[in-house]
Amino acid sequence: MDTTYYDHGTPAERWERAQVFFGAKDYAAAARVLGKLVEEVPEQTGPRLLLARAYYHSAQLRRAESELRVIVERDPVEQYAQLMLGRTLQRQGRQAEAEPYMRLASALAGDFEQL
Image 1 (cartoon, rainbow, N blue to C red):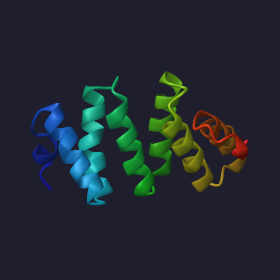
Image 2: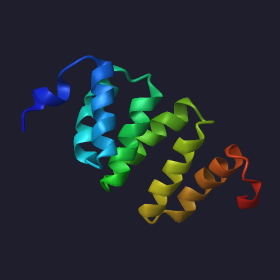
Image 3: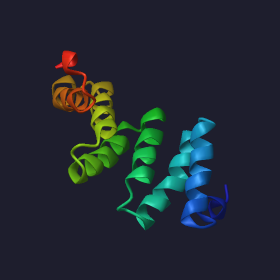
């Protein structure tokens, strides 16, 4: 497969392309586009979060975990990243490690019954 297709265009065009791949459930292609985009704009949360989701849905759980940890380290109140990190850890059988992230995600969402 030609990598220039995945790398071609402005960051905005590649972001749109990644969203199309993700929407079509072609998570590997989305991750391929997003990986380069995240390298180019590492401060942007949106591409990194979508990359983590693409990794999660394609069962690349260690990679998803790595990207999510970057997000929650930078922005501890990013509720969806906390939730995704908790779920990623759960899928890896790391329940005890997942619990604080799941609790924080519930608190940030205002779902205090889950605490």
